[in-house]
Amino acid sequence: MSTNGIDTAVPPSGTGCVECDATDGWWVHLRRCAQCGHVGCCDSSPSQHASAHAATSNHPVVQSFEPGETWFWNYVTEEGFDGPELAAPQHHPMDQTVPGPSSRVPWDWQRHVR
Image (cartoon, rainbow, N blue to C red; front, side, top):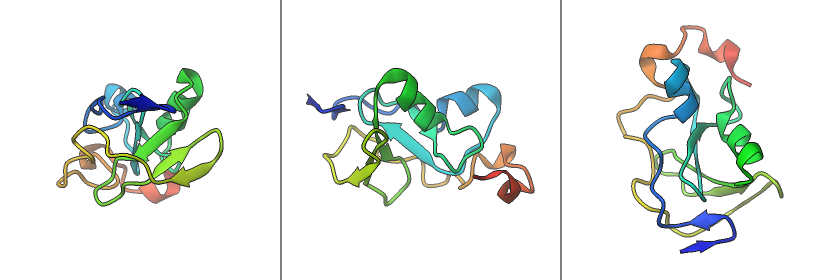
């Protein structure tokens, strides 16, 4: 089902931020594009790939990709809301660290968050 920027049939692009994984970067939290499944890092992360994806793709709706979080966010309206269940998996692996991935997180990571 695809409606209002949400496609419930599209799976996530992976278990981590697509761009951070490609450049050996790291993230604080992950967000999943509700339209195409792109997984990007949150706006507290150094690179803010989820909001960059929303801006360049015209896909404004994301869902948290964190365990236990099901909320959606619309970058255009700047509003959170409850939405439908998206295709599995619903979150990154439970053993994935936050921030993550642990092998790439600097020891002074708190100094790098926004």
